Image (cartoon, rainbow, N blue to C red; front, side):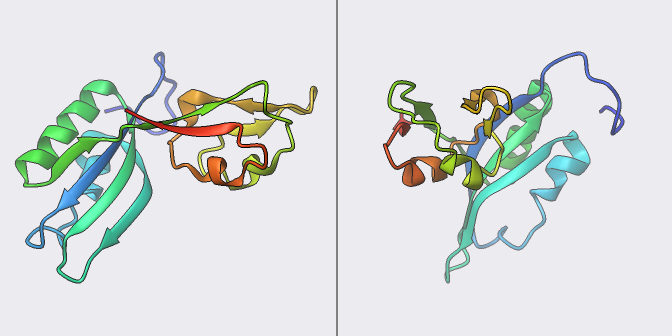
Length: 147
């Protein structure tokens, strides 16, 4: 694991996953172990626990690919059901009118205004596929695609 603040010579690996926790493990701090034991950062994109105590969570994992793979095996060995998030966001470049509305809601800052050109830049590698932008876009230039 690398020290916080140390320079990286490789791009960070990102993976979106859906996790399902049984009632027996929904009270355990399994997700915090991803940071402690595997050196990963994570964004919780969606989380809920229903009245029967079944937990569902969508996470963006960020770190070294090997660490992400090891962390997912750890979760599965602990009874967590892991599934890859199968949706992604695309943008129709011709439809986009660069109004900037999407940038206000993008939690990962994958959509931003280029200060020189005043156009919206979409950085796909930062996108967590949350879908907020697709609901906001007045010309429907942002699309949620599923596998």
